[in-house]
Length: 432
Image (cartoon, rainbow, N blue to C red; front, top):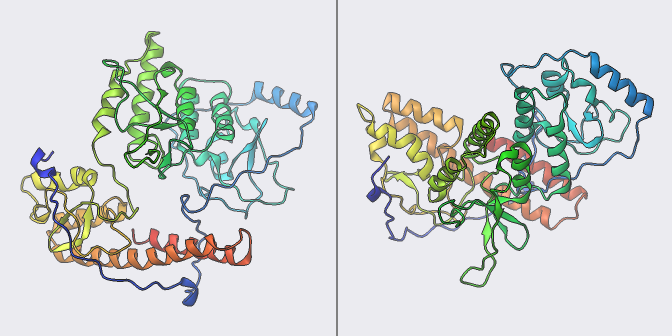
């Protein structure tokens, strides 16, 4: 871990950014990609799932109950969960498996076959969408919350998918987690966790109402520890905006949830309240550490970078995880030692802003090779290629979002822009 002085901020101003001309994607369409891609969730709102008004007959219900008594139940935590191919909304399919008595919970055949098909839980699912008009849906089992609910169901040897039912009900009734969007305190309820020593909420830790209820449903022992945060006003009179600390897109999400699983299990074993001080300590450790924003471009934000290679910007979290260990290793990496150890503004930053270059698996593989081969030229080439693609695709993305905002939803223009936006996202996924 770098000493404190390495985090001191240099307040010098960077060079002015050069003007950029915009170019709508519509003027130079490229051939469509062969695979289907969807836009990022921040740009297009999550589409509501169509509720089914059909009812099942009582005889069918009785038959299913009989099946449950005799079905085999090979369940093991050693079985890896399959990856989900339908994480984005799509209207291409009607082969969904819908959970009984929960018409808004659909899973794809891949997840059904890989998780539920040969268990006693298979009878809770049926393909009821076969004769419905296809609408945009995504696989609900792609959610980390739902997958955790299944793992707890197996670990606790539950006889019914009650945890999944509960989370599905919460998802239907609550405003969804805003994920990477900062939301005003006036638009949503926020919860924090008070320090047991002074009863003051841990700073910079806020959980949306939906995720708070998910936590309490999965871990009953922690109920009551998360309390409502007071609304606050900023100096300019605007309502404060908050980012959900338990959003599934955060790298810290698995660490928070792993600890909650451990604390809840210990509480069950001992029949005592959990040692919530461990969770509070973890939240406090993260309170003032800048979290990686991945490919979200931010203007006038300081970064770690090599002075001769400002295109390769690294956030504080990734610097601590990857660059600093390379500096302090024996022998140390000569290239890692070139980084500014104090975060700095990027000279010549364009109007799109700057993002972290070291969050993706691809660029981490690049960095590993750079350190291993001590090849600065390779890093410079890869960083430059990524930066050029980020700039070009970022401008196209901005144009398309503006185009969609000015079009009527569902119109040919809107759908064309959305298709192009998916292509941009897919192309960027190959370069990020």
